[in-house]
Amino acid sequence: MAWDYLFILLLPITIGGIATLAFASVGESIGLVDYPDHRKQHKQPTMTTGGLSIFVTLLTSSMLLMPKNPEIWVYFTCSSMLIILGLIDDREDIPAAHRLIAQTVIALFMCVHGGIFIQQLGYLFNHSPLLLGHWGYLFTIIAVIAAINAFNMIDGIDGLLGSTALIIFSALAILFGLAGDTVNLKFSLLIAISIIPYLWANLQIRPVWIRKIFMGDTGSMLIGFTVVWLLIQGSQGEQRSFSVVTALWIICFPLMDMARVMLVRKLRKQSVMEADRSHLHHLLGENLLGQPSTLFIINTFSLSAAVVGILMELMNVPDSINLVLFVASFCFYTYSVQKLLLIQPLPTKN
Image (cartoon, rainbow, N blue to C red):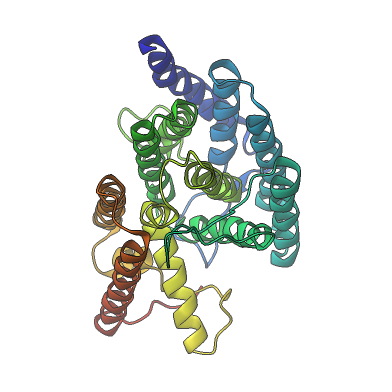
């Protein structure tokens, strides 16, 4: 057993380092380059090969270390389709409506073909779980699309998407480990460790052995889908590892920031999909603290929320009370960020 976890630690680091270097070297030749423009902060053309290298690392490591059950094949079928969609989008910039349709089809495939969907929302109102029935398909499709967009929205400063994902997958590994679910524990660890070589290159951590790379839409789609996949694995079924409300704490930052931004846009009678720079990382990073401090503050927030979620699960806090606390936290978060907007004018759209 100890050898299994040693391989889980070493194999994705090794494969990830090779894949990160290899794809960064050929990124320009295959069109995976993000060029600077008026909407972006970086000054030099940057390879968007991070998501592809993470996927190849996860796929290779899983084929070598994970049991070959039907569910893992469903996951890699769906994630492969998302990777293809993301690669095309990183090259050609697919219209949002077309991306939405493709993501819906992929999520529906997971629900219908794999039988993997959100069936219940926990014990929110009484001693019986709130069952969704066939509405669970719709709920799952919305969750997949929301997660993909939430993680795409936080991909605005170096290291934020990768470090947030690392915290989330590590927290999920802890929850699966506490519940004795070794299969999903190993998978969570594999995806978490597969992100580390990307983060090393993205943040240019010394010694710098590779040029800077970005995650790209390929990466945000992969991360968002994988998070939902593992949350469904952990929160559904008779042998669930944690509650649905605990899952909300684990993905607290991307979920809250997306919900806050869309709510504010709606109140301002703007399109909820209209791009602006009102995300927390924009407000903190561009004019107040700078990117390193912003990354530290948001990661501390994400880590704290994950710890709260794990403690709530360990203490068996009723779902209804847990949900009330989460909603109260969201209200406080929204209030605090809006206060920040009063101090800090909204950055110019780009």
